[in-house]
Image (cartoon, rainbow, N blue to C red; front, side, top):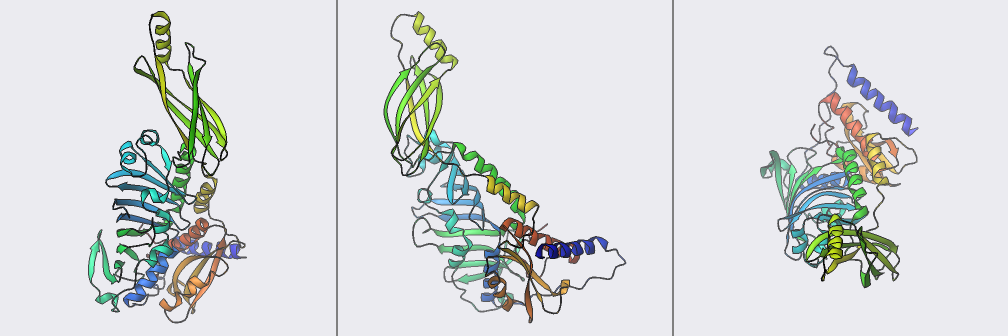
Length: 457
């Protein structure tokens, strides 16, 4: 029944929107949101931040080791992240999937990142690499988890009304400055306010969340979740060849074999000394007569912890053929050799789930058995536009707790109605966005308390 009810409501909205002409009577004006004191405006803005399906962050921080880290990342409510970062000016692409951090960067980045041996850097350069947060000094998923992040904001040190707070501009947006006991928050000047930026002196208490000097602009990315999950799925599919340099691989004996005019192979004995099963990649650079004559790559596994195996890497380049024929026809010594690295590969995440979420965000489907709930907060006088205050999404059997806590910010007599339920957050936010967009199409603006899903057109 919930699904049918949502379809009926949305159909009526679309019919209203497309049926208006210049002769139609004007729609009722939207309800106005009350002006709040600064502490209440901060509280409401934090509720909205926590309710977002995805948030963009753009700024910088200082890692525990003193490194300057800049980031432009989009982080979902579930903890996936995608974007760009730099460490002391050296850039990298960043991806967080299944609670695991992956980085892709050039040789200089890896040579100058502490904890990565110089001998490893050339192998992992320009490849995806599984990187523990402690290596980077920043746990992106934990720091930008909205529950954790909002706990770092501290308490406002002023009780004045937003109209009386100091105003400034950020990227052309009018904002108010809200000093707290841990830094400064910047909110929009009018309801629903919304967090635009935070400048904090410090964050977590343990590495790798014990960062300082956080300064980030904030914007809601919930409306872009379909594209976001497509991008996440695309990047996740690239992790099939990602390296895991922190899973131990012990190298044993080696031997050259089957060397003919067409090719030559090197077989390397390996043992997985890590704590989990791993595939292993061997990459070798060959020389002949003092010159580089080609390279080869090979994979083996997965090897279980403690399991031994062998990887055979075969060179079949034209340069090898030339070297071999010259050695056969010219008397004397013709030395050849290979330098190789053996490194574990990650067990790649399955991007199927991310692709399904992208589809859900594009074509949402209501599901009465789902645990993602789309709700509306409205004046109890009715369901017309002038009574609607905001739409939102909450999770779980106790989902009403989230909207109920917001009733104190609404006009007197506000109530909460469930509009629909879905099976995943992407479809829930997509359904809520449809309602917001339809409202905006009729009224010319979002509901008065709407921050999530109300990005500029």
